Image 1 (tube, rainbow over the protein chains, first blue to last red):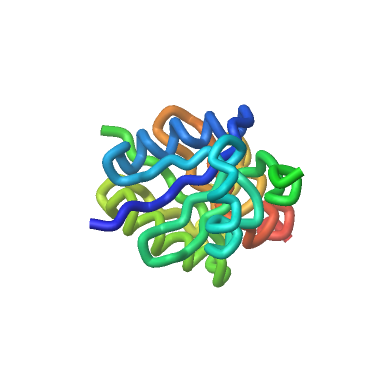
Image 2 (spheres, each protein chain N blue to C red):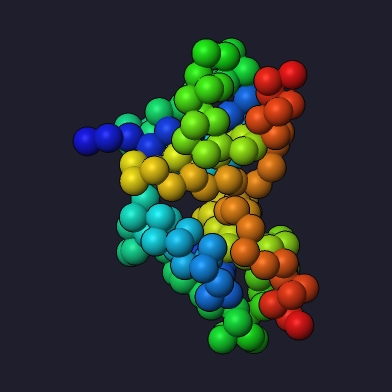
Length: 77
Length: 77
């Protein structure tokens, strides 16, 4: 089964949201991507419609922006 | 077991996020509260830290603001 993808950038808001999301949907159901470290995946996140992190892209392609840690522009630097 | 509570106000962004959240965590694990209709629960949402809807309050009390439909001030009108 396809997994949701949780994009974050290591910020405190991101880490807190990551814990909540894993607790809610289970770590087997979500791939966690740190786009501050895996910078080659920033482009993929952007194409999926991610505008800020933390964000969860669901298996049907919807983007849930969860709270606000940093804009994608800030992550790109 | 305690349930997470999803607060919304019937806006399109809210409905879309509601579908995603129910699909992710299962409808047995979340109580959906329409604070535009159940207006006596606005106060409860505010005390939980909800600033805008849609928002999910987890069982440990964390607030996840998901996308942005309306501020709580707008819902209070």
